[in-house]
Amino acid sequence: MPAGQVLRPDLELHDVSLVFELVAAIKFADPGRTTELRHRYLALILDGMRATGRGELPGPPPTWPELSERWRASQDG
Image (cartoon, rainbow, N blue to C red; front, top):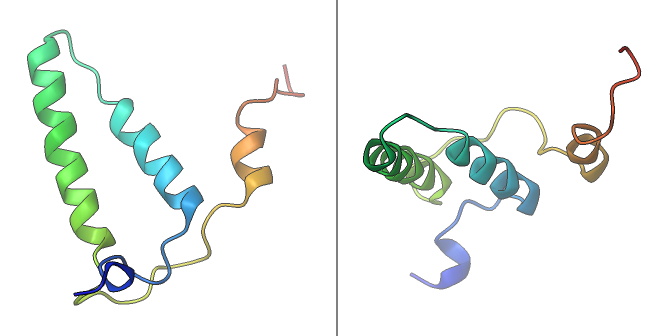
């Protein structure tokens, strides 16, 4: 299968950015267990990125402004 057909066509760069954040957020007291679980969930997520046998993703991917706003100081506090 050509490289362009391995990943689902609706996958965007910003989707991948958030996926890495989600996997990196897995933290346990035991570093070995943290690594094991990060690998497990990354494998599950990568499987969902494959082009074959998948329906459309719900909603659009995050935009750059949406990603950026999470790093700005809150106006509420």
